[in-house]
Image (cartoon, rainbow, N blue to C red; front, side):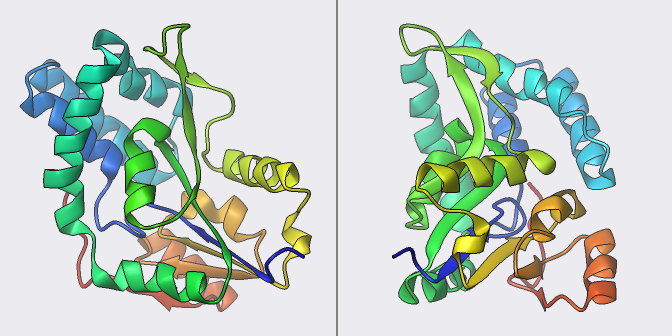
Length: 230
């Protein structure tokens, strides 16, 4: 029998008080491997789009994944290890760990569902002890090196719904298989998936999601006193 409960978690500004996409872009700037002025300008441009709910996901992924193709997998993984240690781990709060652990202790099937790519987010999911990650996939060549392009459907907006459905179907399950289903998110961009679960929860919500949650009577959870600036 499947678990009685499903718990899905957005990552950036939900379990993390920062945006790992933005933080990784800043990491590349600090390492001097991208043009600092242009990269920061584009980073700010896309982040503003995301907050406004107007992000062009294809254009963004071209920007965000492109630098992966310019360096070897071994080099990128070395940078990522340092990035995780210095820019991510110090910001993971006990409140976020406790939220995940509450569902795990209840035997729920847990997954992180994020638009951020799998290269950045896979080790973060491991830190939270969440074995299932639904993230934007990154294309690799025959040697396992990154091409700088996404693979398949990005895990963004309605794409999150489709990717979750595909993941569950691989186990012979659907959202209807669970007595209760939760999705925790901070952004109105995640409204398509929030609307699919039995227990949508707005976590550290942006103003538009906060207003929508109030209209719908959804619970609002503040895991962090304030969001860190990525």
